[in-house]
Length: 359
Image (tube, rainbow, N blue to C red; front, side, top):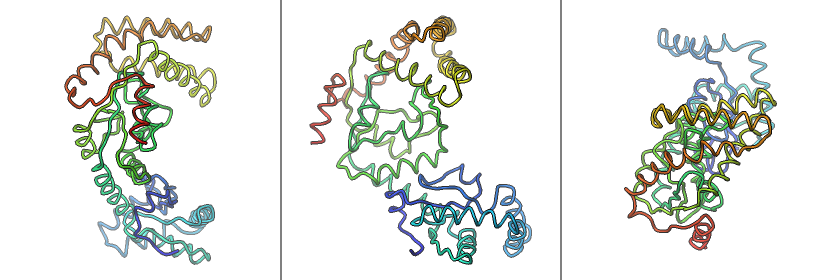
């Protein structure tokens, strides 16, 4: 296999990448299929960078070889060899396809492992991802909107041409939107989005009607602009059905996820703090008096749930939170886009409408 410039194929096919950049670079932005096995750690990279600025490229290269030698070098080579064996059809990748990936490639070759690299490195892949997103979102978009708990995300995920923005962002988009997975860096989120787009051949995309940000991740400007002028399907579900969905999502699934990760006692504490933080985050918008009232009801519901496992008590604060805060906010936003609405209906009616649209 030769060195590659087929960046779209890497995105589309989830081609494994052995990313040899330093951890800090990887954390700032990475491709979806990348594994970080750095040539230099953060401190070593910083030392080499300082040397480069003061003494030039040759001195920096010599310092790099002195820092990564002996037992340390052997450990890193063995880690790359293991990764190459596990991913025989992958590529090496550094920042620009320059010295670091070539050095690793040479060291591997000396160990009878001929492994190709990405020409242009992460920078070229990143630009390809940006360009792919711009091209893909020129296709028509269809947005699914509705009040909290209407099942919008479920509908998006059920579509062959659905792009689950909240799944890519690892956040559900509200003050209670945290998941157990940390959100990705902005560049990594955008790379994930590009990969999702190029993997699907669709005449149009189905997306949830989102604001400009999902948690800490912002939608690319080109996508936001397209969404602002796209048709909208509105899911209209009764409050009872919405509360049942939210019961499962917020109170059952989240508690199970926290306890599975952290154990019964610590998991419960993390779960309770998750709900408290979600309410605390909107305290100023609620007003301090209403926040205090909802907080008291939340604590009562948590006490009841911890004793008996019952979650009905949470409706004492969640139902008025929807009716007095989330629903009016969404209805106001929807009123400004009434001309964009092409269909309204229940969850099942919208699902049938989308099925016919995709037929």
